[in-house]
Every structure is written in C-alpha cells, then in structure tokens.
Image (cartoon, rainbow, N blue to C red; front, side):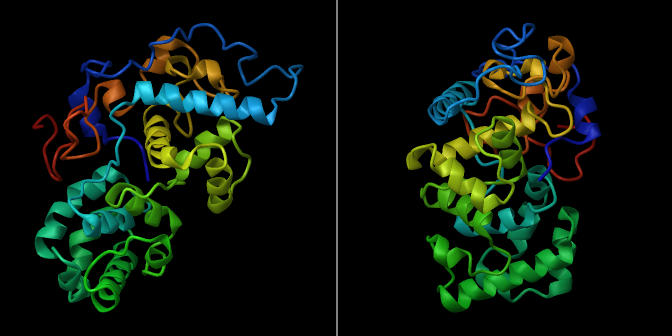
Length: 306
C-alpha cells in the first residue's frame, strides 16, 4: 500500500493550505531544536537504555498525541458494508487505497453481492480491477472468497478471525481490517506503515507481522487497537515516510528515538507532508464528514477538474 498521490494531483493541489481545518498542524510543536536526549540521529549513545516501563509510557503518550493530531483518523478505503470492505482490502495489496477507491465504484456496480462476484467471468472481472495491479491473482482471490461466502456463509461475511482467514486471499491483516471497521472487533492492522513506525519508535524490533502484532498488543489496551492502527498508518502516510520522513514537521519528534533519519529543517520538512497535511486531496472519494481534507478525484478525472 503506497502513500503518495499522483503527480497530477500534486500539481493541481499546489498552493493549497498546509494546515487542515479542525486538525492540529503537523508543525504545531517546535521542531527546529532536537528532541531531548537526541543527537540528531536517535538517542544519545551515552544515554541509559530505556526500560520496558518507560517505553510503554512513551508509546502510550505517542498514541495520545497522535489522537490529537488525527482526531479524524479512519480506514482509507471506501466501503458501505463488510463485503465491500473485504473486497477493497484484498485489492489494496501492492497498490494505494486511492487507486482501489477509484476502481471499486465500477466493480460493485457490476458485482454488488458475493453471489454476483462468485459467478463472474474471470476475464471480465480482471478487466474491471486491472488498475489495481496483479489483477489476475486478485480476480482469483475475489472469485474464491465470494464462492466461499456464498457456499459456506450464506452470502454473509463472517465476523470472526478464525473464519475470515479461511477465505482465499485473506490473511490476518485483512481480517483485522474487516473486524475492526465493519464489526467493531478490536484488531491491529500490521501493514508496511505500521511495522516501519513501531520499529522506528523502538516499540519492537520484530519484522514478522504476527510477532509485531503480538508485541504491540501487549503494550496497549485492546480497546485502543483499531484506532491506534489508523493513527499510525495515517502518520506513516503523511509524515513518517519510508524513504524521507519529515522529521522537522513531525508533531511527535520529541518522543521519537529515530529523530534525524529524515529532513530536520522545518521548512523543507513541511514540503514533504502528504494528503491533507500538505494541502492535497485524500485517498477516499467519499471521506467521513469530519475529514478536514479534500476528497480524492474519481478515476480518469483530468488534472485540475476536481
């Protein structure tokens, strides 16, 4: 799942306000000075190792501060029911949520139910989902999971992890997305953004998603898991990027042991901010009412038309 809008969207949105209404600006906290205990590339080498208790306290404070920065954090896939969310999440592998959201309106118009999708002609389904990439494998997964829903679950998406992971193309990450956002069952969504940030914050050094999930679950109350996932993923897409994090515009830089891995100059860092934090459209064509940014344009919209 990638994290930046298209070049055309960036040009169209140039000059837009960098501070979304109703949200704390990414540069709300002074970032010109290095965080306490930092050498510019992490904590001082002479500092005492952080205790488990101190790490847990810092982790929970990061979560609280991210809640202030992203009070509108939400799943960035458009959906109206559990089936649509399940399908959209499967499609989101190796592409952006934006591209999925631009593709699913036509998909669900043609195949609105599991029964319809189970009966799809593979080549026709492939053509509809082609923009999301890996369309042949994804079409096989969609037909397979729709067939399973039709034959084993009376056309309904099951509401348990045990049942969801038996569906073709559905792993723990996808199952937790569906459980947390369609059924209200707490779950951690360990995608690439989540894994990258929790390692940068020294909450874990694990690489395996299931081990990451287990270690982070031990730090936070279960009631926080779903929203924690949204906040971390939002921050990873908007500020703490993979290649060049915007350290100088990061509102939690003072809590980050990896401060200095990215751009520390505040003005240069602000130019790296994405989506609503940088004044650009978001990923959802139909965002929640409290989202402070602009909706994404439909597939095929000319630059500037949105």
